[in-house]
Length: 283
Length: 336
Image (tube, rainbow over all chains, first blue to last red; front, side):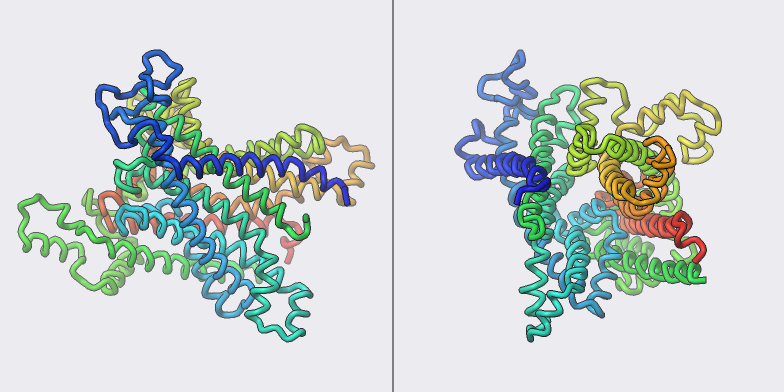
């Protein structure tokens, strides 16, 4: 069947390809960072501080995107920074998704007291400024990869819980769920086999969105110097340094910023594209 | 009377939420490993000195006892004493609140103007390239959070084309003796337009960074509900009466289409206020959020508590106001 909807779908395909392409490139650079990075990302050379990128006058051969104030290679640090960003995106995103979606599914389908308890917690969480909450948690847990992941899960599970709860609630009121019950399915079985598959497109879209958010949260935490040690290459750390020296060396800020921008955009566009692709109604 | 009963119920749930926030902050920050008291004293301090100061701040008691004492104080308006500045928390926090409020409200106004314009343009020129442009712009603007927009703006208007200030709230030379901390409001009332221009030049970028994602949400949602309203019978009736398209959209469709957007803007406005924390840091804007980050870095427990509670209070108040506005603006609920 080709109707107007078919025309709407075409740009979605392009969107999916572009964002998927960028993320694949990112994964490859992260995995092969030691092979493709031209320099050691930690190597300092104070004689080569704030060298501009290759097309500008006064650039140093071998340092394609210039150097920061300590003479470290911007390109190499960005490639290694992709590792941390992607680990945080995948691990924190997935854990947040599993915990938040499970709670949302239970609250939305079972209703009653589980819903009341979970919703009360969601309300309390919504009254926290998320960035401040994350910073507070890192201060408590101490800097490090584990702390960042825990902080993201703790502050963002409500995003899944809220949306999945509402979806599960509207699905639960539909006739097909009632007929599954009549056919003798247990409530738990109905939740897994009937409700979950119908809520899944939303969950997938939220998951990719969350991965983008996780990358941002990591960058924000690095920006306030609370992420990993200040020495290891992170995009947020580079942005933080670039922000202070933006008038002397704009490239230290611009390149990580563009990378972060495209990555976050790709994650969210991928989510939107996948949602349309998996939506049983649109398919 | 259901209106007042609903408000009473809302106030009660608000109190429960705030209590929950207080408990969580209290417990979380007391698990902090570093001893804030030890950091306050010079290196040569004896154990007895530390113990004495700990007793002074009540840190020698159990978490439960500390909470009861703190809560008792809060109910009387006493939020304790800041460890790093040794001043009352309530005064410190209230002195910074106006800066954050002004920033948030300016950002909200910018978001409503930008988002509203986009929605109206998209509706007026629906099914044309203009609507497509609105959709793409809003989609992009929405995917990127305020922190990144802030950095992009710093590059654009701070470095490439340096027209705005990238840090601070006011140029020191123009800091007239303000009697309130609502600088923007006061400059306006005192007709000091030079000061006003300076304040706006400082506030423009942080406010815009906060406004862009919200403007995108408003544009998307308002356009969608406007387009739905345009198919309703009463709009067709207005059209057959001979009103022009612009009149039909702004006078007939808009009042009805605005309600669903309003509820969402309420929730999103709390997200915007939450975003001020990092945006204020990014632009060295001296508001509550910047103070909060310093408080966390200095492990100033009473100050952190005070700020988080104030944010939570602000969020719940915004939601309450939006709910009441909804009743006032919705013709169907007005006489219920």
